[in-house]
Length: 557
Image (tube, rainbow, N blue to C red):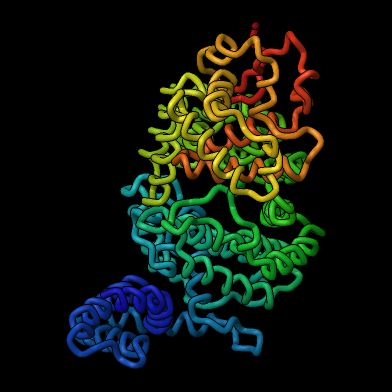
């Protein structure tokens, strides 16, 4: 069955385009294509998949179409007249004709006689093989609305006698924007599937890129065709890093950039420079993605430049989705509160009511602002709006992390309280004493209760009760026992590596908790408040507190 589905995905568009061109009727082409697929589902499990599956499907579909026309002579006569008229109006073939029958159908589906909202919908349905609900999700409309659009578009093609052909050279540039929009819609569905078990549908994305390459070769001076190809290449370059081994989405900030396709990035970057000489929406989007792809890591992303590019893009195409993306960029440039204010201003736009990225972005900013009850509600909304299972899993995981954090008042509690930090201190001490370099910090021997002292100090620093201050406040020298050695940077770095390993040993697996603990230990290890000699410790020195937000004001003794 899987093999049959793969053949269907690969051949359906080609089959439908060829049949529509041959018989001049899209409904007939769809009907016999579906019948051929049904025949394959019956025959192939018994007879095996034929050596040329596409040829088998084409032969079967043609026979069914001929049988249909033989049974309905009146219908056949009408089709014959339409075909003669289409052939008569078609331009004479030249060596520059687009070398793919599917592109003939692309231009038919993107014909200006069709309503703008119908063109992309019909192409996704006919050429990309999406179901009507999938197309509806791609255009953010109800399924019933989309079904009516598709029926209306087919009726218009039939009644207006729109030919299944490629436009002539004079009208091709005017018709191109519609085709570009359709190709980009196919790519978008491939980039983030609107439904199903997988985040990406790489077959659709790569098909869109293939078609965009053909158009770019034929229209090298069309800057938006260049921009669209650049955009898709720069986005598709991140495909391998966008999911984890379980298929869950990986955020841009967490992606392994070594897994990006740097050849595609280089190709897309070169195309961007050409496209920006007469920048349209696709070229500007490509430039935004080029900035992302050229950053060495997420921290070095040039957010001010990205916001400026979004300002240009929003002027060219004032859509709510672009406004949302701009708000996210502003959140990284100016802070989550600034981004959230813009996102909340978009709440009333009906086009975003069921839009998963809107709910997820809002939830993330609420989380970063530690407005956790509101973040929990927003994540629940994102789960309800998710189309694919990986999107739902992503939102569920983030919701679970926020719920856990909301239940924990302190890092101390999240780490397991006194017992958890005792395990962590013991694991760290064991790692340190096994390290040839770091163990030199204890060349004079460790105190018998060193692990207990260490865990007690960490506990108070991370929001636990003041046990350390109460128990050890008269012994100032213990202040240095939990830290590194101020002037030995390499030893300190190794001690931090031992701490990271110790967190795993102590079964502390939550990513946010691990990051907070790592940041605290790294700060404490290198901070100058911890002197190398006991007599250098100030008498009034207190235990500095550390929370989910990082360094806090020193606690009172």
